[in-house]
Length: 448
Image (cartoon, rainbow, N blue to C red; front, side):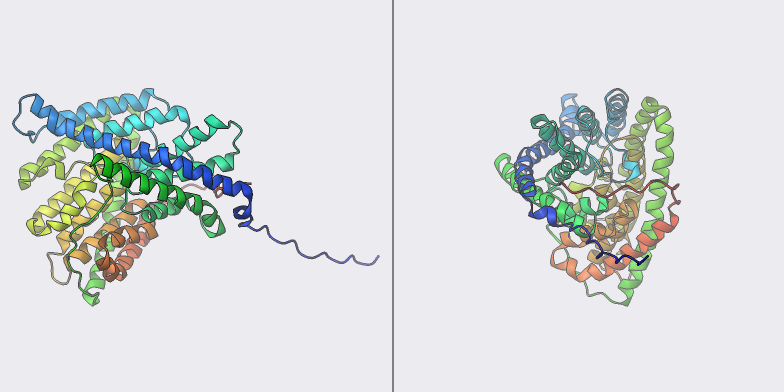
């Protein structure tokens, strides 16, 4: 019997065919419309966090008759905050959102029923002054609000379209938080693990939402006089050209950051497992201990507890601008106290891990800059990048966070930052236990 001729090989599907469809154009319009209310809601969330921090650390002590805020004030306040956060996590749906000790979660928007718990747990945590940032709650709230709004209008939204719109909502919510819409976009895309043609499919609506969000943040910041709550560095010292000594310091900073980041993360995960078994009592204890650490720093160095508390976002620029007023010893104490408070906050509270990792790395880099062969800006940038990648395991985002904010000087120090990030990332992966085999999650499906 004669052999049948084989037909021509089937062509692989064109992943960009979706972009040419009418449905994709409709998706972009919906994304742009959603970006307006979601970014306004994100701005309101950040404004409320700022008001709560001012209320709890300035207005409340003054109202109770204190002249200034006592150095011991964070201890009872953080204990009370821990109680409220624990009750929120225990009794509201969604357990207050993702657990920051487990990294930066970007996959899947929370259900509508979980959104109040996510918002309340984050507001209580950040308002009390824990060492966490607002980026992770904003990512969750932005995605959840986008999906909720679309499903409220059209209940039969397909899961892949819902996922795309949820991602766009997250882009809008963090559009200016890291200083640039592009930095937020890189953070979300790298954390989600998307690549190839699929990255373009998801990135276009995400960038559109981020652009709309940045405009809304800028407009609201100007109208209210509050600014955009954006990370910014206004005074950046001149950086020397990279040399052999600088590359040697890049290796040292990368190794030290990987060891410190691994210690913080493992401690946080160890404590998290215990906190979950006795949620209320141990969350209160963790909050009180964060306050004790802030008090120790203030008593030891003559500084303020606020230098240890909070995410470090608002103090980030001042740390670099005022670096000459910090001795090497003070910076080391600040690094250690911030790292301890960071680990405790990761284990028991709700918030994001990005800004504290940047601050810890910056303090370490500035401390090492007191030694020969390392200038201030290079040490600052390498510390930020190396500690970010140790905590987040996002190498591209870590390089960009450490350099883009520095402006022209960031271009000068970028080769050193890359070396420090690569060394830290490689050692961090070697020190991370291999997880048990699990099904590999499929990438975000296109919207048909």
